[in-house]
Length: 245
Length: 151
Image (cartoon, rainbow over all chains, first blue to last red; front, side, top):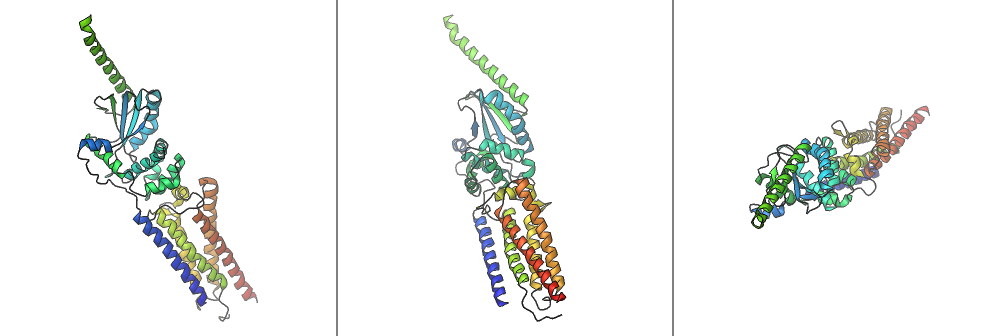
């Protein structure tokens, strides 16, 4: 009987050690879930260089469609799943415009949004950002209600085609916390208050913020911008050619 | 009814395996609660299984139910090893009942892994194997006591 209790004690000690170590090491390597302090963001130059968006389409396309988004925001999910495909079809695939995604995690109301933004960046490391984004938005109603979402994000990344261990290591760290924090700061500096916020610009011209984010509004805004640009260049041509005429 | 008898080996096996199973369940539970890093998963897709909608029953993680089941099996089997419980047929019946429920639950989870989630979690498989052995030991224990009383 004594031998039995020895065996039981060994199993108990081994179990406590294994689970204890796992919890301890997990705590030490905890994923960054909130914005971090980034030095120099007070200076616009540093902020712009740090707050990198993720671009889809021809980088030299004349029109830029920028979106500031929060993964926990239902409207952002609707935008990505229903409006963005139309933008891609009519403007991105034919090289008329490029789409640039910026993170704007509203952590005061969406506790997982910062982690989700980092997860997106971790997927981007493996070239799977857009695939991951579609999956995470498609499953938004599932993971937002959970007490822990890291496992879900890993699952979505694997579905998106990312290598699991690499993604996990990235997620379970503070990787990209600085870039996401800079994105957040940029959105605040631009006076953006909600998500999704869509802005369009032509060339190096001033970006225009759209009041609504349905496809028709975006299409109309782009067409207006293009027409204005043509009119401006036409007027410039007239001015240039006038003396010789 | 005699109380001087050899220690019931089946109950010892159940106690040791329940203790091991308890820590497997606690590890899965800690991971589900976000207290650990990613699950160590040499074989299978633990994250997929853990992230599936089947990893909870209502708001309760399946691993918490598993931990509760193992604690119950451990407590009953340890009581059955004390002088007061050594010859108890109630203990044997309880062990068989608990392990039968655990086996049915494990079989359902294994079915889900194979045909619904289509991913395996090595820790869930280990737990299912432990439960199966516990059930066999509980069955053998009932038969042992029945054989003794018939003799």
